[in-house]
Image (cartoon, rainbow, N blue to C red):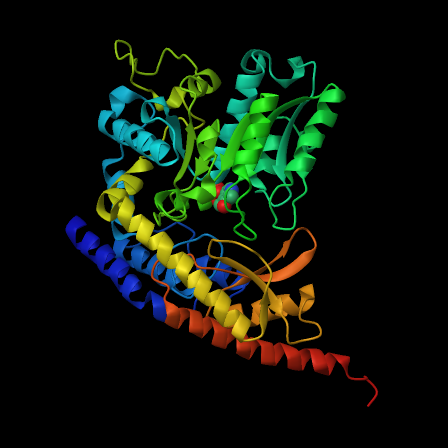
Length: 479
Ligand SMILES: *Cc1c(COP(=O)(O)O)cnc(C)c1O
């Protein structure tokens, strides 16, 4: 019975993998459709396991955006590695409890091994790297905020923010990630503690403004405690000038966090890692293996070169937790991170990295950047105007062939046409807080030139339709 069910699940997974690229990427469906599908499930009667699995498999095929599709040019949502999927099943099946070392020696040491391995890729000394796996980048960034507060304000852990005589302030560029907005709220700081630093023409944090902001805040008796540099912005794939920011952070004695959730992967590519130059000076780093490392969601990583800071931030003593005592250098993750009971997040990263290797990941990143360059060229030849200047595979563009081609409403209509065609997936965004653009990102390691050309074709068709709609809308009504 068990065996039969497993065979069935494996067949379902493999069948999805083989037909994924032929499915419409985005479903056409409304909330009411799904709700009526779920209505029969009142859980008053039991149903056969196979039947239940089939229902879920069919519904997942029909009613989700297939981010693993080669023509998904979306946010940083890659196709997954096969061993990553297997790892998630193994983690569920063996279900190790990663709260305390004594409960899960192998899983916890696997994760610590990875923490040191990733630390050294970012230029930390492996034996001077600590860290924790997280659900994703948002939790890693929240962790960074808490560690920076704990490090800067010695009584933060015991007495909290209300004990601080000076208002803590931290800095993020206007292109930085919005998870810091939530982190500011969740930590009790509130939004007014977050300074949004404007960007320069390259969409990098304006370091001149950063410096004067800090000087101004200090002169007003406020307490700057963290600067966030972004390595690979969500909007446009831009890497801040980490060296310059690190120098300011060093001079001002402020915690430097680098949010490299996506862009951190270029550290694996010898000829590109200079883009992250200065990241080794960061006090902490966010890196998301569930982005460019193509493991199933959720796998984030918080790294730091301060060996004691996680312990200082998260340590608690309980009578009921198993003791690690007598193990001086072993870590109990529950005293070291936000989560308590925790699944084996690192396994999918371990298996994927063991199988793909650093060189395999370097090749993947290189390929995707090459496809990004190819897409840029093809867009320009087809009359689209590329506006962002990124070495990475995010391309922001507008329609240079139409009078309305730079307006938000026109570009949103194009994106809608593309998405509703089911042939490709792109989105819109607004860069520098003022410029509406279409955004396409190469985020799948299997995306090739034929997929790029298909996107160009889908975009051309969308442009024809939208241009027609705009012309009709402009015609005098009374004719
Ligand atoms: C994706 C991303 C985040 C958020 O990470 P999640 O894994 O979605 O929680 C934060 N910062 C940057 C730069 C990102 O790209």
